[in-house]
Length: 332
Image (cartoon, rainbow, N blue to C red; front, side, top):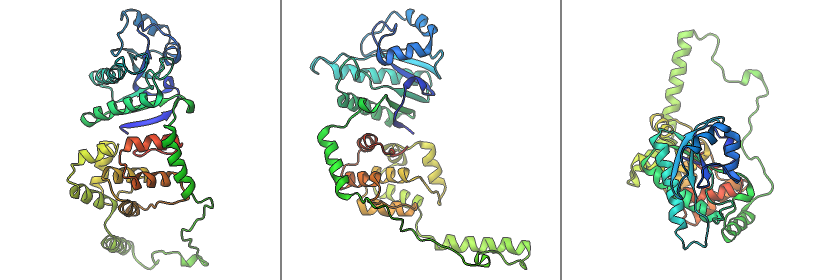
């Protein structure tokens, strides 16, 4: 997936490169920097000694050593001094230069911490917004799996007003009693189970099966894949614009396009509905094509409904809220 957000220890990430929020000496320090140096081992320290430090906003690359990654990209974030000393531009530069190095070294997957949001004091919400904006711009022109690694719950919180609005919407709509209204089928006799009669020869059973398949396919309504492609055309979008806006991998989109009867995950179907900026009813219709529905007994569904009703179709903003409420992310 192009951009994911997870809670994890970045030193455990198995990817082509991890990014280290380093200090200007590159010789290790506190927080993420110290954890990476300890986990990588002495070899990293020795290589960093040869790099002669790094300026704020710049980035340098080393081997991964004892870490489960090929490379470590070291970047020096700005210290927060109120926001009027070029901190935002320097933080943007950290992400841009790190991504440029990852691309130069042919990395297909990169994991970032939330740079400068620890002991450097950059407000976490603003640091997150800078990270997402730069990564989003990069992904419009490049294919790469990028992960934002948040160490713990305390390291990431939505703005209070925003969080309270979503929580209130959940409280107003959430159904405590989870009832299963799906139909249940049972058969009193074993002979009631559908089977091919024994007196039909093998070649006849194949023909029978083919005929049945043809009847089923002729009776099936517009599939999820067909509706998706139709909506892309109606919205005047290209395939690339759609799957990138949906935070979906190109390979997955190719599978959906090539298979008329492809059954996506629920998060994937909703991601496309968000990318296409569908109304709530259109979203429900697209979900139905994939065999899903929105329910008020599911907090994930209620959060999606909240954003669609507010006409907010920024998938990164929605994923930020889903992550904050410990829900699955769209496109994941």
